Image (cartoon, rainbow, N blue to C red; front, side, top):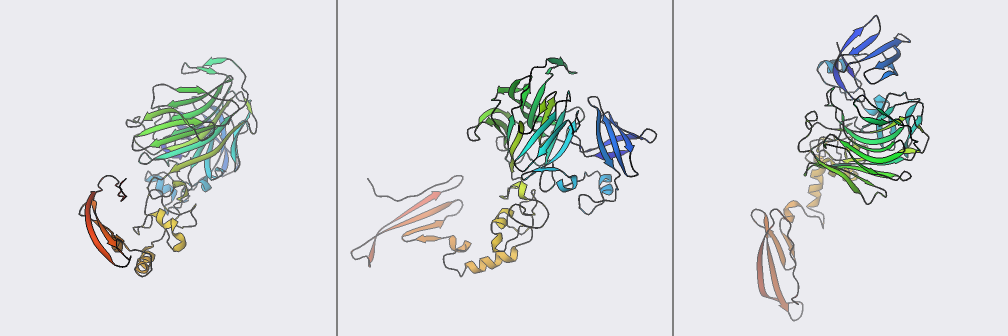
Length: 451
C-alpha cells in the first residue's frame, strides 16, 4: 500500500506494509516502522523505530480520505491517488507561531518533554531537561500561504535570524559514532538550515546548515554544506547574540553565509556557487528550518534563543514580499494581500500586484481585476491639471529645452538660447541640437556656464 507521511524530512509518497496482527506499519522505502496502539476506535499512540532512533513516540487519529484539508475542491484521497501531495496550511497543521513566522515542529531522539521549543512573540527558547543523551527538535518554516518549499533558485532572497547559545556546557568526553566520526558527549547546538524534499533515502535533506555549536564547552560557528568539500568554523563569543544571515544572489548563482554581533557589519563565512547543484536537488525549491540539539545538557529559559527570524523573498517579482502574499484570493491589508506568491499579476488585469497594493486606498484590488478602475484614472488624468497621460509624456517642453524621443533607444535634445532687453520680448540667438543614445545604460544632460 501507499501512505503519505507529512513528517519533517520526507513529505512524500512511500511504500509501506501493514500487519493487522501486530499493529505495525513498515516503511520499505526508508527502512523504518511504526507500532500503533489504539486507545479509542479513532485514535491512539505510536512508537517509531529506525536505524538511529528507538522509542520515539507520538499520537495519531483516524483520517477520512473524503476530507479536503487543503481546501482546493478535491478530496484528499483523490488528490493522493493522482500523485499530488496535499498543501496543508499552518492553521490546519496547528503549528507554533513566533511573531509573524509559523513553524512545523518535530522531535528526533528525545521526546518533547526532554527537548522542546517554547514560542513567544519576541523569541523562541530552547528548553532541555538534560536527561537525554541525544535529541533534536526541528522547526520547519511554513509561509502564510501554507507553503513549505518557499525559496526559489530563480530570484534573490535573504534569511536572517539572531541566535544566542549561552548555556554552560562542561567537558564530558568523546565517543566514535557509527560513521567513524569522533563526537562530543555533551553538546548544545542551534542552527539555521536549508532543506530539500527532493532528497532520497541516501541523501541528507539538510544540504546547508549554519550552526552555533558547543561541543564539550568549545563554542564555534560552523557552516556545513553539501556545496563544499569541508566544513568551515570560527570561534564565537559565548555571551553575545550572533546575527546569522544566509543570502542568495540569483544573478551570480551564489549562496553566502555571514555573521555579525551588531547586525550591521557582517563578516562572510562562506560563499558557494550553486551553478552545479547536487544531483538530488536539481533546482527544486527549498525549505527553511531552525533547530536545536541537546546531548546531556540542561537548557533553561533565556539561555539559548532564536530572535528576529525574517525571510525576504519576492519570487514573482511583483514588488510584494512572499510572506504577505497569502494566496486566499481576498485582499485584507498590506500584510495579507490574498495574492499568489508565484504570480506577479494574480487577477490578470495587467497591473502588478505590488502596484495595486500600494494604491489600494484608491480602489485598486490585487486579488480582483482593477481594469475598470484603471480606465477611470486614465480618463481623469486627461482632465486634471498637473497630471500627464502617457501620450502627453512622449514630448516634454521645459521652457526653451525640448526633449523628444528618437527612433530606437534615444532622445534628441534641443536647446534654444534667447536674449532680451526687457524680459518681455525675446530674440533667438542660437539653437543647439544634440542626440543621446540611451540604450543599455543611463545618461545625464546638464547645461552650465563655462568656468
